[in-house]
Length: 147
Length: 147
DNA sequence: TACGAGGTTCGTGTTACACGAAGTCAAGGG
DNA sequence: CCCTTGACTTCGTGTAACACGAACCTCGTA
Image 1: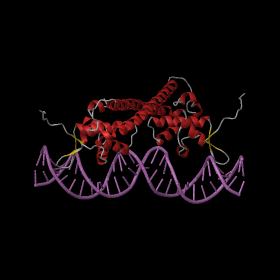
Image 2: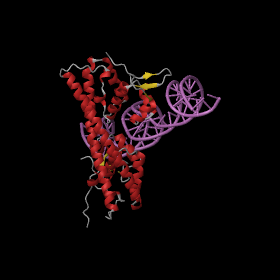
Image 3: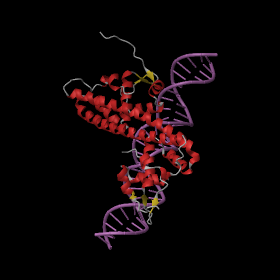
Image 4: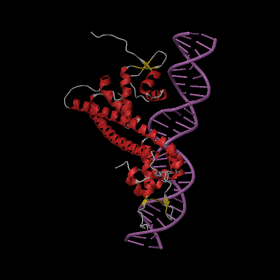
């Protein structure tokens, strides 16, 4: 026997706040069909249940890996099509996981560079009269964030 | 007494390969004035010396923090203007360091999500007959990459 | 009955390029 | 000497993923 209980439904506004994205973006995604389980109320207002929130979260994460709207849509369609598409989905995920790994490395390097720059400026401010104004003092050692 | 030695100069093509960006992008950046020390040869060809490479590297890293071309240009101008702009430059760098930190966290979360998805698919492939084709099985526990 | 919050379509603007066209110019090889 | 290659230029279109405004409709509520 299933327990029947009313699921909490969220409006566009609420969802926007929950995920820190704009209402524009939410409409954009729903209009693109990225959230198949989206519900509309009798006044045609978009409503999100837990399932549609899950889809949205998945979209946000995969987009974070660099997946395009187009690929996101494709992936979603594969999910809906069932078991036969398992391998293709697996391959897509592998691909974007690899991209995510690279992105992480890149993010680390870039942060290192920024931290280094901050330290550099703080050294100057703390009395070291090293003139950073001349771009020729942008030395390799300070700048190189790619190796 | 300075040792006079010919500095190695790089063409657009070489630079593109070195940094993994396109020639289009390099022309775009130079045309925007992001690389002040850029040299032209007698045939008007762009040539990069170590100093211009340093500027380019800086641009690539700061852009990686999310800095726009406009801000990059502004920052470059500040550098050229000298010591008086130190504080403003410092503040810019602080701002983008903070963004870089957030980006790193985001990259970590996104990668975790992707790894988790991969494992999920591998579990299915390795005989666990859990049907992922139904989007209702996209459970919170699997998807949540934001917390 | 006025307000606020939602909806719609239409259309422009933005960023950071990618890419092609068309024409020029200079160096190097057969 | 010609041909190819690879620069350069300007001009212009296309793209992604939105942001945003205009104008207009439609609820429910105070």
